[in-house]
Length: 195
Image (tube, one colour):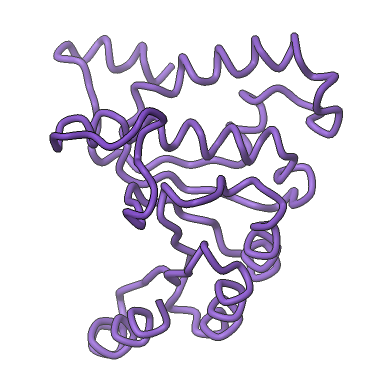
């Protein structure tokens, strides 16, 4: 990650002042991730902390909280990129055989990460933390928010530190890139999805 960040700074940011970049961090080592955030955060051309969507632990787990704390302290969002370290299966049921399986399951990866951040209380602990979801579409969001809120109402005694519905937390803390847009064929249906 350090070498990648140095390369990006030298080969891209130094040559084009209009560009901005992400600090790539090794989530599998929170201590090293924090060191890399601290090393690069002073360079204002780096505007967010980039982590792979799939890893050995969910991002909301307390072992990863130092990464979230460092990002919040420096005013940087955590950007989740759909990717995997390839040490763990990108699906809940094992390794896919075809690229289409991998692509369709991207939404599952983001749902798992978001639910972890919400249920573990990361947004309660770090109230200024923002998360940006990159490259997994938006079509899955309404059903995720509906079901997350429904289940939270029934099970919130299990996690009293989550004082608002997942939908409210999502609206305050999460942003989504619109590429790729998984838009329905009729533009009116897209408007309904966005609403």
